[in-house]
Image (tube, rainbow, N blue to C red; front, top):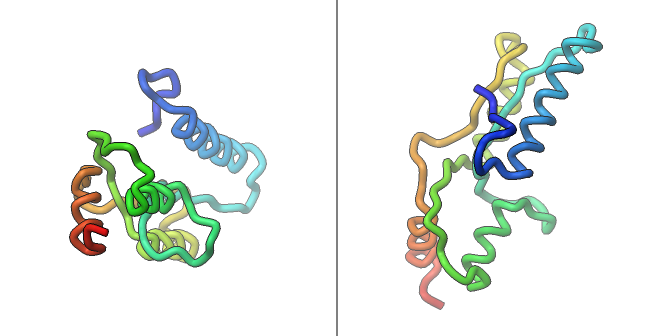
Length: 127
């Protein structure tokens, strides 16, 4: 399935991801030669950060922890652990059966933002 770029409520971020992936597939089709492509599409990636330059996902959690979020939007996310995402990338690069395939990296369930906040509070404490 592909994102409908003209769909209602499709953000610029989501459009950019779709356009970039389509460009990669188009390039492989036109000029790829012996190059192979497989794509990993992760949802909200959480887990240990290896550097101070963190992703948008980590910034979201940091804002929740520091009280910089003025409220808790009624949103839910698919979440995947960064280590599972890295593992999936390695498998896609090393398994010949992955050639030409698209993979969605996501845990089994969606998680509400309020549940993430409750988990953080329970694990980190109220202060």
